[in-house]
Length: 445
Image 1: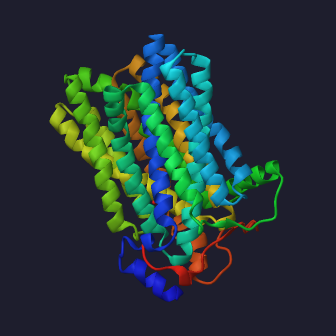
Image 2: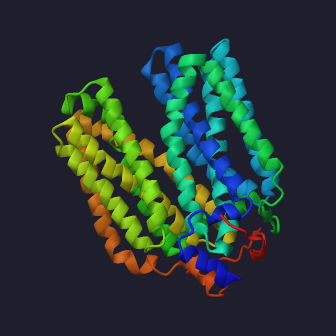
Image 3: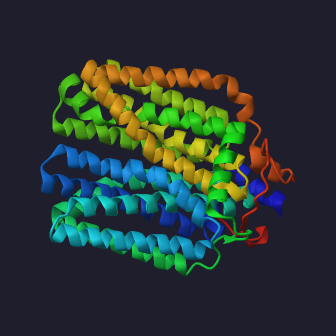
């Protein structure tokens, strides 16, 4: 049976993960989480700025909603990942629904900034934890079937569509129904997905000896530190995220001052990068079985080259064409790193390590934003793009000697070869049981 499943992946049956229950529901919950996060961020940013008419509270909102949750979520994940997913995931989504309902109430009534910030912190922490648990569950159900890369490719496509469509949906809801109603709709969507997951009987079941919270939290951090490839992947991605996001807060300045375009042109520039992300996500479906090292380095290189091209671009058209290339690299890079990380990680650490990766994805952009703003203050938007591009190229060059470390396949390869552990320093912690391979019928940033 294992041989047959492996052949499905080799033959490129891209939608096979849908036949592995409950992948479809996990994909739906992950995508709804991303859409809800996008809608909530836009709606709350508008709410805070409209009610305060000040930059400082708006900046504080982004710190509280994005940066601080990235510090809290790994600890929460370590606390709940040894509980049954059929209980924890629905509870997380119900709590998110309650949080957005409370925010809708505040938006429709008396505005209290401190309360909005506190609720944003709660929701941000729950969102990252939910994504980490879902990623761990996807690995648990798909790795035994040899379909992790196919599943991650579909998760990545869902993420890309949610990222591109979530902000647009937020604008539509706010413009037609108002902020409070938009937040209420967001709350309802989380309730629906909570009900769906609560009715899902075949979510991976925790099968562990209960550990004290601190011991489990430290164990996850210890594994990330002691396994050399995992440590390199996490550290490299942290640096990459700073460089990737360095230009985000200055894109509007770049578009209007460096390219001399209008607000509409700025929107087209952003849409071009978003379109590239969708292209990259589709492309990953075709190239997912290539070398992990090749996928990570080439996609990272594409982003770096695009940034250098944007630093030199003289017209909006050229900048948009370059953005499509960079966005395509963006669409492959995150999921290539995530998949490699999951394949290196044994089941007992999946939720904690993928949760740590999700936290990096939320925290490091804050560093990038500050660095980008400082470069523009000292030089120009083009200089910020140049610094980001050169930094990415240096990171790629630093990764070249690491090819042999990323070719081993880690835990997933060891499992396919019949070995119990494929990590450099195995830490025994088997925590998740999965449906037997015989249950497979057909079907990830």
